[in-house]
Image (cartoon, rainbow, N blue to C red; front, side):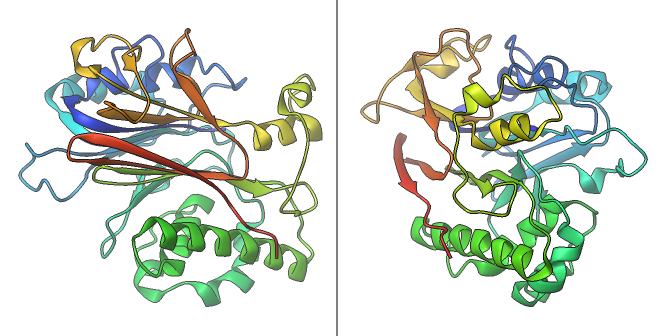
Length: 318
């Protein structure tokens, strides 16, 4: 699967998130800890900074090549800093069916919404499922689609289901999205394992989503992902382990005091000034990291320089 990294906190050099640490996002494209393949299908990031000429808009960079081969990265990124960032490296299968263009790289950013999105997962048969799902999509978002990926379509669907930008609105939209996908799979007889592990980001807010459907389109797949991971890559059990594994997050302070590592001073909500949400723990010492388990959604927000965190269960049963 792809790798996702989201950050909110004090303004820091962007290279301390994307380039410098040994397990930076660019390095994860070459040596992911929890995925057996290289990430060769492109990469990108979106960032907000008060130092940009348009600080209210995200700076979006996407390129359809392996991140560790991108010569622009070491030239451009050291000149940027950010207080909110969403990065992504793409692990799509490298074959003739994969379209390698900027438009298919994450994160996705549309007009008329404050949210950008990146996904660590996939929705099989999404083009056929559109026969049931398009009726729930708004034209103003469909008209902005430029690529050919399931994630961009899910971005359209999720935005269309949002009735507002509150945490409650987002959770309701995510729950409805999963139920609609499950119903479409059933109606069209296209059951399939679908990984919907997403980061939805806007200035000073990260919403992390860990959900999906099992091999038979069920909304409540079960199993021990660690035991299932012992299966060979390409098997149903291995795929189920990738679905059920957690996402990860950490909160803390003094991140900006050591820009060569993700090992900043971890803490609870009291005193935390920064937060990271990621596909995998980014440090060898994992004590400061907590898990977002399958079936959960997390709301991370920076208010008055402090971080708040709320974790809820998703109610997706039809």
